[in-house]
Length: 490
Image (cartoon, rainbow, N blue to C red; front, top):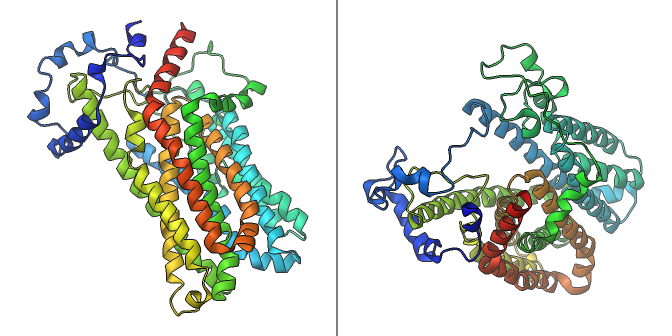
């Protein structure tokens, strides 16, 4: 009961981490030596805390290893999934430079071809509810292989599609397969990828059979830590509730606010990307090859934005962790449980502290992008194309930084529900993106690029209060949810 009470919103204010402490902790990080051990200046904060740690603080119980995978295997798993994620985005973006060519080949308008982007986004948003829910129940390997199969078949049919109807249908099926992962790693999954669903594989030390066992593991000597699973363990069954479960996250205020803000930014970025072919062809007279090259700044921006914000989030979390341990008189060696973040830990502030300048730069770049394409006297100047391309780079970098912040915070707010949080995030983002892409060509035609993208920038500004609300009240809502969950488990 003591642990539950400590998670209430009205907890002892002496243990609340303030912004001043957080800033001080950021400076304290420089006291870490190359071996990763805090210097004596931090050791002196709680001289007797280490001896009393287990008795006085509820989060110090030693935990079983979350998994038994060696570092080499962990790196391999990250590499496989990273390659899969790369090609999932490629399946979407490789389509944009060819919109005009596809329209001519199938004798339809470019607006009609844009509907295939809408269908792609709709299916991409909905399908993770299927794949994600099943992967949390059936297992990771079976769902990877099933989604691979859908993706491969749809790609083969798309390469031979004789008419627009076939293109529309199988473009949606392609999204259904790529929403989980992509075909380039299917052999690696079948041969090497172990099952990681904890209800099936535990921490990786359980001896599995059938589809859950990698092919290579059948011909190699198994590690000494492997053991037979407990036959009494009942695996979850697939029911209707399995697919409805992720939707329950939409009733949580803090989660919905994060999803809406991230979804709007995703929709605007999708509108910028999908309208590039028509705008650059009419303003600069580019052919298909040059149109493809025009998407490179956008792609580079996604990489830079994700990498940049990843480092910022790591730095901010370490600083917040130091500040939290100082506030609670914990020894520097103490580790907060990553899968069960304390309710009074300021994870919302930690994740959102860089959002103001990122969102501001995104809005300014979006507004300027429209004006850079509006005046024919500017677009006709030699080299002017560099301006909108640079702005596309900024838009892509800042939007993907927002996506990373958004997805990470939603995952933090949904411990143990990684697939569900990702599925619901995709549902909101791709749903809003589909609506935006469906209307962007009409907006540009009726308003012109300047006012169309200025309007989108203003929409971003009007949505920023959602993040502000989460900054001030998100921790309180999370603490209430933690307490409510604890009472249910009693």
